[in-house]
Image (cartoon, rainbow, N blue to C red):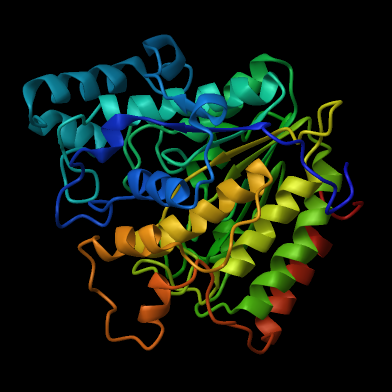
Length: 394
């Protein structure tokens, strides 16, 4: 492993996107009916932080063969049939959890997630070729082999990891989304060469509502889960992450790392229940980058994916920071004027009465959200390190 702060080789990261992410999707009343990938890339460009010729890759659609490496053939055919019909027949609603408010039909119903999945596979191939990669459209970690779950139609993290596994790589998957990375954990439960680690809202009060700590602490096998309470602050998140992460890396001894970087842990997120700042999030991403195994030239073997995040302004600011970390850039804290204008054009007023709202248009970072370290958070971390068989010896 490389020492924290070791310089990252310039020009050794790839940002993967596609024009289709500018199209209407999910619907006006859905939490994902907001600009995310397109807004992120536009903000990165406003900072002048993307060399499109050397650093940008257009995403491709995953093949049926790649998709059926995890999903059932019947499910893929159902998604394709629904896109062609322009609706979801009743039998597919019942069988595959499609066409409801959670997982609605929209134009590009199959093609858009198939491109996001192909992009995660491309990202894995970029890592194998000696680069880091960031696919902000990826990170759809809830999808099951034959069902959509939690806004996720295709489980692109699974297929990105499968690509690394086909190359013989041992993989550590780290999920910092506010929600449990349950679909990825399930996919690799029987593969000792994949370790999954998820820090998330306790499922006793948050999706996927699996019943709380009794069922998602993951004190077994190759899954390491840390469910956390509401209103988790910066101090508590830093303690939890920076205590757990080094132990997980040491125990997993990976050949490559896959990061799911959902931004719904951030305070303004409408679906998240944590009180974490953008800078604390980015500190975690930096630690993940620095601890990842490296190619001979020092480039981390790291694939970063998007994930949850339902506040477009907060998400774009944060993911621009993720790209800066991967590409070795130092971005000013102040948003450039074109970036401020870009965010101001977004149709979003959910929290405009909050005292911190104007700051979203001024800086890409947040006010400090430190607070007391509650005993229950400290006890959860200590208990996991003590009881998990994978971590006891690390």
